[in-house]
Image 1 (tube, rainbow, N blue to C red):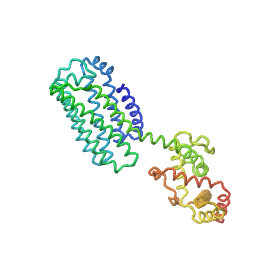
Image 2 (cartoon, helix red, strand yellow):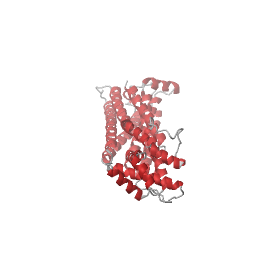
Image 3 (cartoon, rainbow, N blue to C red):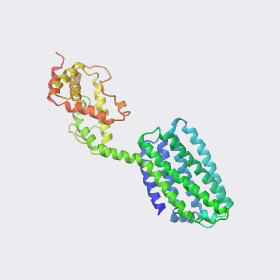
Image 4 (cartoon, rainbow, N blue to C red):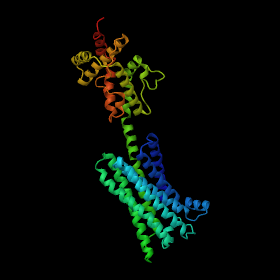
Length: 400
């Protein structure tokens, strides 16, 4: 049962991490996270008795599944090391990862050589260690295998303690959960060492080695893989919570977007079928809101500098009518946008390259708070059709 639970957790985590890898194919952290889930998933699936026996039967090599299972676990341990190295010090991580690759390859070579030299003719999915621990070749095999796991666990615990203080609260929780999973992995190593030591000493351990190992492995895999999907779970929760506000903001931005679109249709990255119809964003609301802000930013930049006299005159007019300060400022900018568009149509174009208080499209991508940008533009958009803005804009036109 433990194999099935761990395999399901690892598979779900792998699917989520592959989606992240598809979005960021050049991110070594995304590759490492996917490698962790893949390695652990393969290890627990291969170690499941029906699959284990099937591999031995098809390959005609007894216990070949054991070295595949253990090799997959080592690859997962290496991927965890790589993930922490790139999280902690990306600039120096490359060299440190290469050193660990060399160590991993050496361990795998020793394991393969020892396995082929050993007489392990009887397939043992569950009791491999108990049956063959007293063979010298398997002793070397287990020593190489457990030594790498021990180094990986110590690496993970050391780096997680060192880097946790420099991360965000959410990432810190994920790192600590992963560290707890690694600690159970360390318990697995100690359990194996103790069991083999007792067997070599001629003692009969008073517990079931397969049960102990499987319990520790299941807990370790579930905790480590769960830690890797926490960020996705938090992101999904955040998107669900912010969906009503962002969907409403997307619709409220339509007057400003459509006004700029009429002046310059090229701002639309993907023109809608009916651009004059305001709509809510039902799916992919964050990306669509981001894209709308970018398009509005492009449209405002194309207008050049907004007339400060128009902004100030309209702001005072709105304030005199009881508008709040931020709404009055937005009304001033809305009026200035209308004036800039009308001057553009009349051939009076300012070649300036920046609109006051509004970021360039490229800057939106670097902003942590998309909602703040959308809210500021939303206030301008809502102010556009108001009497204050519509009456102020014609009054601010230059005399012929």
